[in-house]
Image (tube, rainbow, N blue to C red):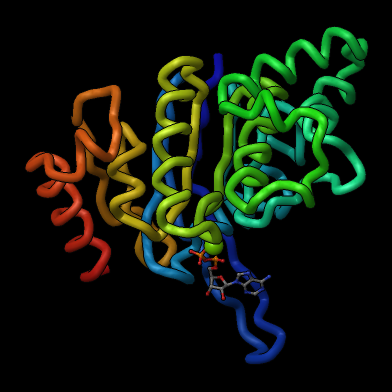
Length: 252
Ligand SMILES: Nc1ncnc2c1ncn2[C@@H]1O[C@H](COP(=O)(O)OP(=O)(O)O)[C@@H](O)[C@H]1O
Ligand SMILES: [Mg+2]
């Protein structure tokens, strides 16, 4: 079961500068079903990355529980794939070896992991780039490889923290369209974090509005799929949902 469940999750940091405790995440509970795409939106500093880093197992929670497929999270693991804003590809490995790295760590033989990597590269239109090195690719292509590398590891849950925030607006729209198409084809369970309301509405089936570390609202996104910017940019349902969520974020 590729579910993700957060139960009264909280995080307190010690602010060494002020000499006080700071509560970054407070009592967040959330259930994500297998194959669901959930986005968390909220302004900078509201605790989004803290939640994602706890789920990834990079930082310990101060309270509460995280369950992936019903199992308690105690640290990082291959059941959770993570994609960040920075590309973090291995510069000394070709694209195909970057994508095949997860399978390699699982002990998948070379021929088989190359086949897996090629399949995922094709899914993102990256077949031609297989033999290239990351520094020979544009920022958008590097980020596309980052997404594909996480998928090729076939994690139970895909965690994405503002993965498209550092690419130009045009490329970002292409990547969003690609991600929604791949999601529809493969139906991974996704938790996607962004401060961009339109991005959240475009991608997600459900949007969680986070405010000062707590869940302020939850909005179902019942827009039809497949979704493309051509079909949604002028869609009244898209506009209404975006306006509603933007209002919630701004009064957060
Ligand atoms: N390592 C840390 N030590 C102290 N405070 C932190 C640390 N990381 C984050 N914070 C604080 O926790 C809050 C939430 O941060 P973060 O989760 O990065 O927010 P977001 O990703 O929504 O921008 C902020 O007030 C931030 O300053
Ligand atoms: Mg962040």
